[in-house]
Each structure stands twice: as C-alpha cells, then as structure tokens.
Length: 372
Image (tube, rainbow, N blue to C red; front, side, top):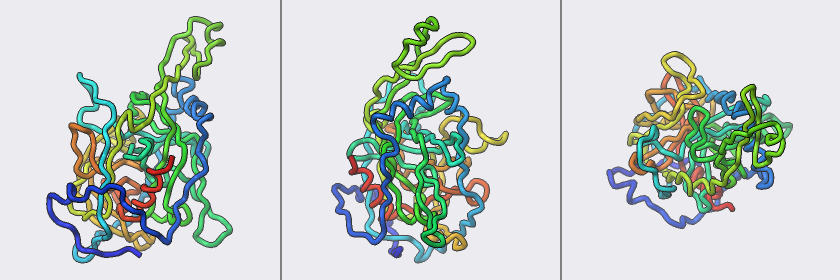
C-alpha cells in the first residue's frame, strides 16, 4: 500500500536525512534478480562485441523510445504526497578530476549510456548513471532499458522478464568516445511489479557491473602483425590494420564515483536533469550528442488509465532519453548529488516522467548495492 504522509519542509532536510546501515524491513513484494547477465570470463567478449570494427555498433545503436502518450495528470497539492520513512544515501567520489580544459565542466562523470541488443536483435541505448554501492559497481537506469517483458500463459497481465543481451555501461560517452572505460553488466535487480506486470510506478532497475576496461587503439603494421594480435578486438580498413588493447580500468565507482540516492522526499524542490537529448531543434538528436543539463521543479502526477498513480513529472528544456538521472542537491564542483528520479516516459512535449522514489525502490536498491 502506498502511504500518504505530510511533506517534510525546510532547507536543512537533505542534510538531516543522511542514513547509515538502514535496516531492511520485511516486504510483501518480490525483487527480481537475474542470473548473471554475463560471467566474468565472458565480459571481455561482450565488450569486444561493441568495440570491434571501430565501434561501429556503438555508433549504430538507436535510443530506446521512452513510452509516450502518458496522460500525466497533476495531483492536488493537499494530501497527495507519497510518504514513508525518509532518507538519503551519501554519494562517493571517484578519482580526482584532472586539471585543464574540459568539455565536461560541472557535468557528472557518473552519467553515460547503456548499450544492449534488443529483442529485435539490433543495438540500442539508454542513459544510465553510477550510484553508490558497497562494491562500487552499480548502475541505475529505467527498467525497460534492462528487461524486455513478454506475455506468459501464467495469467492475464503477467509477463516474464527477459534481460537484454550484451549489456554494457559507458560513462561519459560522447561521439563514440569511452573516456572512463566500458563496463559489462553482471547482474540486474528490479521490482517484481515491473518485471511481471510492466508497472510504470516501478520502471527502474539497478545493474551491477564487472570491472571495466579502457580501450586503447594501436596501429598494426601489416597483415602478419594483425594476425598475431590477441590483446582485444581488431579490424582492418582500406587504410590499414588496427588493434584495440583492453587495459584494466578497475571498479566503476573508483573511476567516476557514485551518486547518492534519496527516497521518500517531498516533491517541492528543483532537480537537475542530466541526459542525452532525444531531439534537437533540427529534429532527432545524432549519436554524437553530448550530455546535457536542465533544471525543473517536479510535481506529482498519475495516469489511472495505465494504473500509474505514483509518478513524478518535470518540464525541462530538452527531451531526455530513457534512464536519464534526476539529481537533487547537485554540486557541479564535485559532480555529485542524490539520485531522486530517472526518465521512464513522456507526457506531451518537454515533460518527462519518473517513478516516485519511495521505500520500495530503496529496498531494491539496497539489495543491489550489497550484492557481491
């Protein structure tokens, strides 16, 4: 049951909500945990799939369309705030930012693209972001960027979760670049109400990832050197031969840090929206579109025709891709804040939708962050 409590007011609310070692209460729902998306032994093979042929598949991937046409009707302010025990998990920093000019000033290194092979057998992408976890290896994104749901014979309205194949996360992805490495998905965690029924209120997932690799392209002199190269994927063009060495990048959180997470907070403060625009003034965004930021004040909304009664909506300056993070109390100097929403759908032009981050989301996250 979704409980209703009065909002917590005051500018010091966020600082007062830091939690440590929060106990996990019993719950009546299930958390869907996949068998390994890919084993450690196969991680390099999955990464090579995306980096081969000069990263052609990364460039060819198309964005997953966020569900559109959702009639996000604003809820009345009085008595509409979802409630529960409120809290936040602190963020964690990665390696120190290098000095010097950068196009990534005041943008989070934690955000990037997740790539996967869809049910149609074609490459696709969504946005994702690194979040704090015990093993510094966790990515948050929309549930429909991890699972394909399909009807089953178990009963009307039910579906069986099928995780997508060749799932990888590339933080800071821009124009084909992989500045902080590539991380193959290891295991996914989601709310069973989404994986079974496609519940929009639960359209989120957390994916643990293997240690990453940093691709380094090297020129191979001739066909003999090309044949002997075995340190990673390789390809040749009309102008020569290229090999891609896969150098260790370590854990995701050590490299780029991890955003904190806030849940059961009142919906009354602006959030920073980070993502890759789905559209530009000229039309659909190109694959080279860089990470973009906007701010918006969220409001509670619902669409009863879809049985979605605990959504958060925000109007922003661009249409963000599925999985784009919404960050509370974001500090550009550190590139860190608190994940408090992520794009899962659209309601009209310029209005993005997210599940409300409640205690049930926290339990899914908490299970994922403690897993090995």
